[in-house]
Length: 365
Ligand code: GAL
Image 1: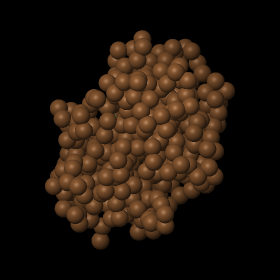
Image 2: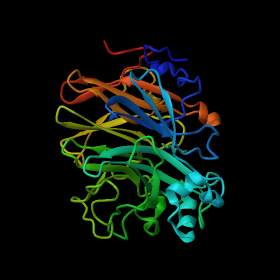
Image 3: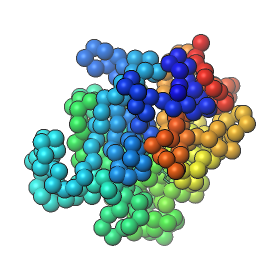
């Protein structure tokens, strides 16, 4: 069990909430929000209480200090059967939808078939809304595989802790050459989205970073001003302006972008499913690139598996002090709900290099 004044780091100790339950927020993200005048850290992630499936939706926790986590509940709930739309909880959110619209949403929220991974949230100042994006996948009509759908889901709420309403799931930008290499997705499944993350720049612009073209290529696409959709419809979007294709053919995922001293950093993993592999990172002057590949950030033994972890987010704790936390998942394929969290300090070095040390029971001093 992680102590309540140090991060267990590569020891990967179990983390519990204030009620003593194992924290279920895998593939997650932590950020600071002020709600009702109170500043808190908020952690969202995949609820894997029941393992891979039934899919538990998106879980939220809050904390004053990153050590003690209060359970704030499930903010995006899945359904057991379609009739559940008629129960008060779901009626409140989806009551105005037609039966056909409910059937479409059910494909994305059916806990016995859906996959909800790597949820990320951003707050939109103009609309005063919280927007959730996630990798929406799972079995659906015409596709028995868990990762054949390959879409991005978008859900919105007026309050961070209130139920989010799923708007829909979407294919995103694609490379406009039907003869190009679209990996195992092929041209027919162009615009595919699997591992994804969001990045909100200081100027208010926000981006979605995702693996596409059968995971071969990392796309970075600009979101609209409300953060609820792409800035431009995929059929009209222009590569280089509305989106960029990065690390073409390099099979990267687990994207975690952050900014430090006017540079943008992107930590990623390779594509080996639940099994850990070496991380890589890149540096750019703009969130859409061009990205300079900087190699492996890990500097100690265990590099070949990123100390048995896979990136999911970087927490910018204190930019002035250079306190940034790498958040990784140590997936346990046999018992996904007991997957651990590996948090490490990021070391900033000359020439825009970073390093991830192997550290246990550590804290910033
Ligand atoms: C990983 C990915 C996870 C999950 C897993 C399924 O590569 O990062 O989010 O999708 O594959 O095998």
